[in-house]
Image (cartoon, rainbow, N blue to C red; front, side, top):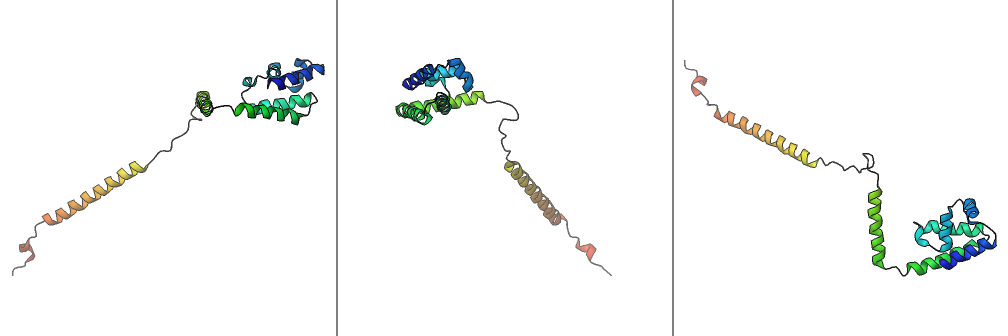
Length: 157
């Protein structure tokens, strides 16, 4: 990437363009252009954005942007093929932690847990069933407890 950045810088200088002027025309910061020319990939959070900046910058300088982007893609392939799987996992874990820390916490962004009404409904059903069984028991026992008075039923003449 340093070679590509140096090449872009040489073309800019040979075209007689000041870095501040180029940054203003491209609506980029001077620091971003300096990092591109220095080959400082780590200064950019997203490689896709860096790729777009390089494409835009190469068009601005009158270069064949497809060839410049191909050169950048070759650099990416060489660079990313040397990254270990552990480094990728660590970077993903770090990114998740940073994402969690940067989340906005408010009543509107906190995920709402769905309430489960299964247990209260089950308990109410058991309670109603128990009350019905007790009522049936009381009614059946009260029927059996009433003594039948035979002497009142017989009419003696």
